[in-house]
Image (cartoon, rainbow, N blue to C red; front, side, top):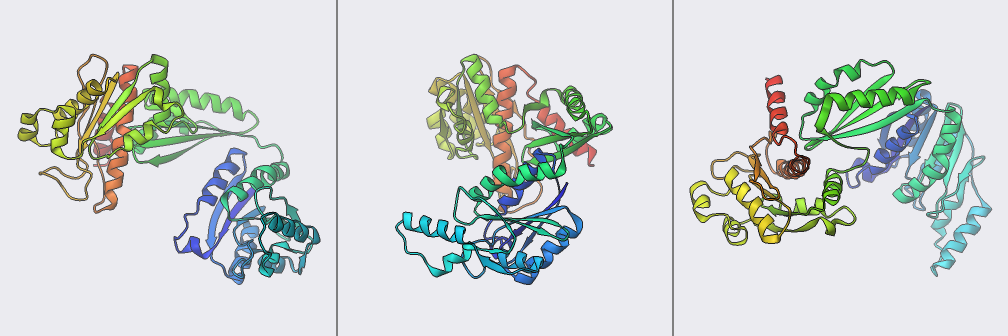
Length: 431
């Protein structure tokens, strides 16, 4: 079963709206062993939509469209599918009755234009929309089947989960595919891929690397009659090769894993943040029950606040400035002691876009102070390509990830410097 995705709307082409629908559909279809071979965005032009549907079904078994099912004149998906099928648009009496009842229940007048949502290509199947007004459509075309779904995300997801995915799975037959995702932090994609060469060579196994700032997800896909067995073997080998780089699976976030480790040990954490401005605290409070493990934080952005709020020695700040490993260590110990936490995190550095006090953009020091121990510090390791304002958020996000990874490793008693070594190996590898 090969499927193409077609998202429709001028707002997507112009960048006014992020195309989150395609990303969500791609993940859900892959989870059910349905291969997505192409994803296309087109604007609100009738001929362009018709052409895109025809081309998609020239290559794939099914096309799923989103958008263009609303009541306005630029909602053209129904018209395009009718023309592609060579049939007329007809007013469906059941849909019209349901639409009138929905509007009446909301105590609103019915605009005549709204009745466009009751028009469907003759012979089309209706896909019930329990989350909204416009139904989805199923239209059988010469090249395959077209599913048209609303562009409103929660409506689209409802119809996909309840109707479209079960139908596609049935059309495809029982898929012989199994997938699992491993999550890593603090190591470069090329380093991970090099270590996993042995897994790449396994029959019936495919790896995909999904990098984001500071993290790499590895999606393992196994196929064949014994897909589940192949997947278990590939995962075990990947974990053996990556070792402690792997912090979680599937949708587990690094902050969620840290929260669980702290809960298991009845420990707490506090954060002293400079360049991240509270982002570490934001991640640590995202998990339900975060109040059990996150004591609080101090955003000591100005240099004098590092002394006044965290007790960083004034002479240290005068001698070296705010961007220094000893400053990060003093921040971590200070926030731990002053807030009464088991662990303290301290981060200081240069997010950019300009250098600061002779330090280049991406110079960041991260420290974790554990229970009754001297703070551990990560030396500068944030190798940040590019320049300008856009690099600032990359540095900040990288800092959050590396700080949480250092905390995870400290809780588990692991080597703190693996991230620095991996970064250095990758830099040497690339020359």
